[in-house]
Image 1 (spheres, rainbow, N blue to C red):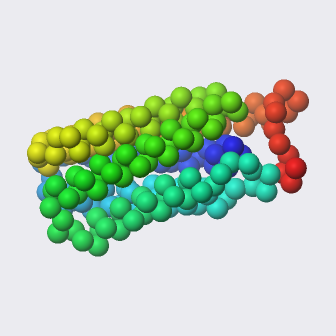
Image 2: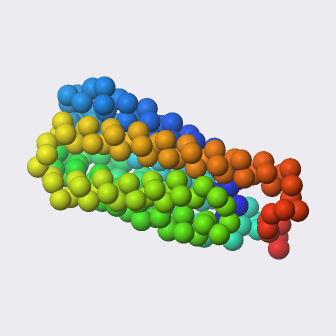
Length: 194
């Protein structure tokens, strides 16, 4: 739990990056497929790197399994590298990469939210972002023929909502940290090393 709480700012930063990505997709939906591939690749790389950093920045007393963040981060990095190193992918292949990435990320986020529900308030934002990831992944798998333009709009809307939910979670975690710092006796916090 301390792993996520101590890195509240990574959720806010990931949310800002997602919102910027979503706005770009909505404001320029007719951009070329190659640009979409590169945008997704850079976003997935950034998202993955933040998760890997968070997994390794855990504190000594942290009981939170770090492996879930590490797996999510590595999966995102692999998806980003595939998109960047093989830009000649067809729209259908890119669509399936994004869909399976969204499904895997969503499952990991829901699992993390379930683990957090007894320890903090506001975990609903992480669970909801996970459910949204799974929903967009399923939509992309079920209706792959929607075309690159529709895919860009769907991904833009998804990224905006996903980013807002991540920012909400990060700010809730920050508020929880400040409440613990002000009133440590009122919270069940495991001291590092215990």
